[in-house]
Amino acid sequence: MAIVSVVTLTAANEIDRSHLAVAAVLACAATAGLFLSGPLRHVVDRRGAAQAVYAVGALGAVALLVRSLT
Image 1 (cartoon, helix red, strand yellow):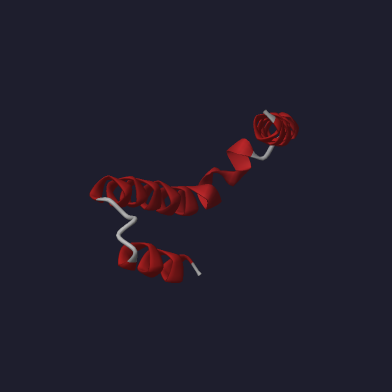
Image 2: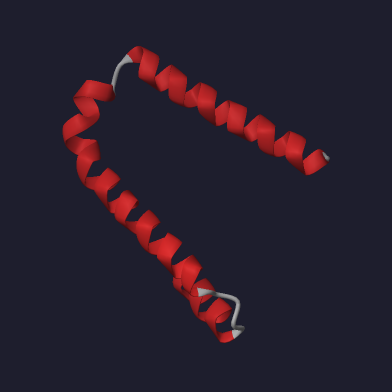
């Protein structure tokens, strides 16, 4: 679906070169995260790390809810 979205947005002239640059940087970061997640799992997989990730995710969700209401 992402490819369909990109093709549709490109056809509608809604994608700028700056958007493509940001997408390339994010794709590189996602690829690096994918390859680093395996070896670093034992270092990060501790009780406090999981709770911190849940807390940040919950705070982000609340922030989006508050932003959507205002």
